[in-house]
Image (cartoon, rainbow, N blue to C red; front, side, top):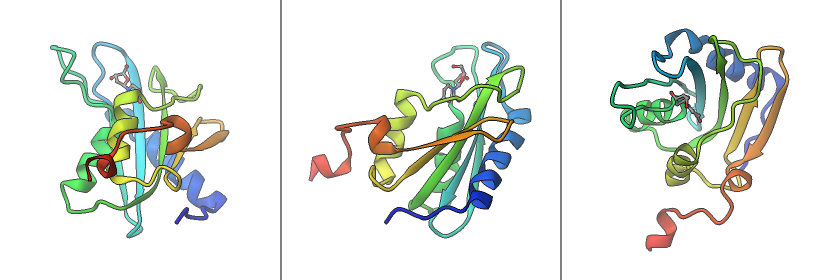
Length: 143
Ligand code: THU
């Protein structure tokens, strides 16, 4: 079921995502991304992007947050807030990359999972995973 998020919850998630921008390891792109993932148990798992000299091992902020949660046995989620930008500022909307959308598809109901993209000025947008990944391939396709 899609969770009814209050304005307070939305802004709290965005603020926690913004708080992660300081930890982004971004020597190559200088583009910081922060994420705050709300699990159905009420816990929030945060993440930042972590780059690598070999480039392809780079991990996005969203996947860092998901992998932190799943590695602790948590696999049910309601929403994720994502922020990002140059100079560790969140002045424009930062939407999730295709790989992260696919990773979300593994554990999230695409019609219920809410993806909040936020900015430091408080403006935000909410899309479902289905909107970002129509006709996505997921675990049920293998059943
Ligand atoms: N990045 C994310 O962390 N999440 C996204 O959804 C978009 C891209 C990161 C990867 C890389 O460290 C930097 O942003 C530039 O692509």
